[in-house]
Amino acid sequence: MIFLVLLGLGLFLAIVWWYIDYYRHFKGVFNIPRPGWMFPIFGHVFLAKNATDAYWVLHQLTMTVGKGKAIRGCLGYFYGINIADPAILERLLTHTSVINKSQLYKYAHRWLETGLLTSDHEKWRGRRKLLTPAYHFKILEQFIDVFDKNSNILVQKLQREVGKNKTDVFPFVTLCALDTICETAMGTCVNAQQCADSDYVQSIKRISEIVISRGISVLKQFDFYYLFTQDYRDETKCIEILHGYTMSVIQSRRKELLAKQNENEKPKQIEENLGYKAKIPFLDILLQATFNGEPLTDEDIREEVDTFMFEGHDTTSSAISFTIYCLANNPHVQKKVFEEQRDIFVDNPQRETTYQDLQEMKYLEMVIKETLRLYPSVPLYGRTVVEDFSIDKYSFKRGTEIAFGVFSLHRNPEIYPNPEVFDPERFTLEETVKRHPFSYLPFSAGYRNCVGQKFAMMEMKATIGMLVRKFVFQEAPDSELKLKSGLILSSATGVNVKITNRVW
Image (cartoon, rainbow, N blue to C red):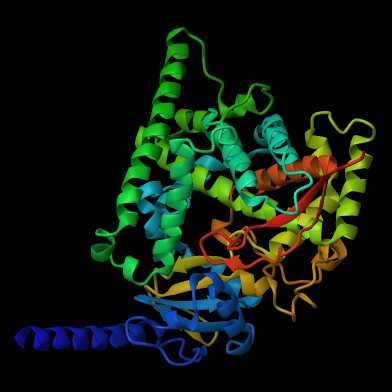
């Protein structure tokens, strides 16, 4: 009896505390509409039937309740505001009080720790400055043959799928992107496309699922509960494998560079390498870098390399897969992409891709941009307010979570007429300049925009261009997408197309 009384009292106090905390966070933005009743502790979690339809539910609520601008709500103990108004987004994304990432990113901390993606503004600022030279176009240009090499393996894998009623291209593309990011980030090959069942490949896949699962599960948000789950045990095993592999590569490469120094052979510095033909993986740049006058430790380097691995393969895999799907379902668009490829490669579709080729793929770039409008790889960006501040009629309190609703923003009919229609012509220069500059945010914007967006666009062009030169993609039976919520957009039913050989 005493136990039940104490349990009831504890529950009552928890609910009271939750309401007080909720009011503290939202008292300056009560003029932002809220979608109906909230359950104590759980908040609005029950509005979505399952994790698969969460983005659609959020989008519909933002368009209806929020009039396409903003709504407020909560998921467990995360109190958030979903913003989809370009004018407000611009002011928030360029505000120094909204530079820290959302607390939801903490679920990736055991793996990524506090690298460029997850670090707070002080550490992030220094690391961003340090890493920016790695994305100079001369550095990126050296990786085009890596894109080609791994895309050729992807072609061989998809060749076995020719003639089938349907093929889910997402797992094939994911392994290709993983091979590419490993070679460009670490200068090593994991042969993911040839050894898909390797411990490293499987660990990358599993830990990504776990991070996403924690973000959308109210119970797993509580560390005490999470410690007793199978996910925690799986995560611990995955981290041991991933950190162990990355650290072994770092230490091996550090010894190689040290040996060169001992032999009086000076390693090539970034500035020298702007005209240098040999490949310089991002790892080498980190090994030669200094932060506050000191070289980075192995642990510092590992968290940045692991961040490259996470950000550089999942997001690109999503974008490439959805682009293939859009081409299959819009044959008139695919025809124009192919004609552009034929104009560039003329009578030699087998030759290596060059940097100039990628610059000439103007229409393909428009297609990719339109795909990222409909299917943004990261549909929701999160930030945490670090200091109280006001914008117009809104007062944002320290600790409030702000979500930038890219998915809703990109499907707002007031910005993009007939938003569900796939139309690359939206991204001609004439059409682009008509829109608010913050109405299209597939790579975020402002202070923490994606440092690797040029790299990603080059990789996507090289891979999709080669695939279109080799294959015709067609709509497959029962191929309708069922978008799945997570840190990265995917489809619960796969990204299915029918593949046939292309006649050049």
